[in-house]
Image (cartoon, rainbow, N blue to C red; front, side):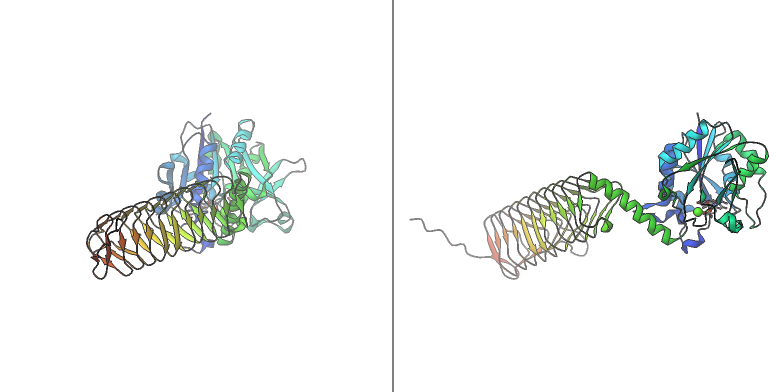
Length: 451
Ligand code: UD1
Ligand code: CA
């Protein structure tokens, strides 16, 4: 069976009070429209058609090649919006699934259940409803004494008795394609000057067709985003779903309300996340790590038994056993080898620190390759930028860089070398050599007396 899908996204979203279309607003780091595309994409067999308003370039950009588009030039209501998609929907489709882009918590399973219900339905349409005491402006489901669905009445038009009805229209429909298009054309303008898709129920009922309703049980899934308060509520729900998943997979959180994990992230068991930890993008974290409080990790790889205090880690690699005490910043291309120690206020960019190297306090290391077991004294800086180019620094293993050393790149320092405190190193330093001063000069080496 061919199942097409339409995602309505052309509304003006006035209630968001934003220059951006509502559906590009982010929920846990991902645009609302992406949730709708993923769910509809799984429930249907064809690529979703998104109905956008005139000039909704941002929505197209966000959706990319995961959908096709239809333009609703004038915002004349949800029925008018579906009709705008007619030409873009596969003519061969048997069923058309209709959802809106502002219901990001609806799962693919729920949409699939609506499609399945319609597959077995003798009438032309199945709609999704939910029982809730919190109507949030949703349409109310009217049923006959025998329980058959007879109409949907919009909140603005409902009588006080109708407003008391607790069965609500979720806004998801699965409709027989051959019946849908002519039925939409029979919908009349509502008193508010819009063509309401909800009136399709009456079109069916008037022509003697039965309307099927699938009642969902998870009220939370039916949360629609009409303003930023709803968006924050959705954040809380998504956060809870994700964090509960990780806790059940062996990750500890002191306060799961204050841990923010995006969808693509992976975390090993027995890792502990302290409050304010935010894990984004394609981040992967190993086992037995402790992160936080207030650590932000963006698309980085972290090994096992890593300890990170408050920090910002962006596109970096951190190997097993690294410990970073507090307020460190790893920027793109930072790579800390096994057991590296970083202390207060260190920054590393585009550099490799080999295993066992220690960088205790207030240092900047950029465009550098640093050997194993190097001691980087407090306040050391790789002066990597000459105003035009980024220049490299190389430091050999076991070298001791004195506090406040300025390493003026391009520069090579050998193994087992030493720089004095406050040295400004402008020339390469040989293996075992000791340099000090401004600019740094070799110190006389004391010969070991043999005897
Ligand atoms: C709609 C339903 C309501 C249901 C609720 C559930 C109608 C008339 N009402 O109300 O019964 O309980 O959803 O969420 O359908 N849109 C367009 N073009 C338009 C108008 C709207 O594309 O001309 C899109 C919007 O961008 C949105 C969706 O359709 O994604 C729903 O529109 P919205 O204005 O949010 O309708 P609700 O008031 O939420
Ligand atoms: Ca809505």
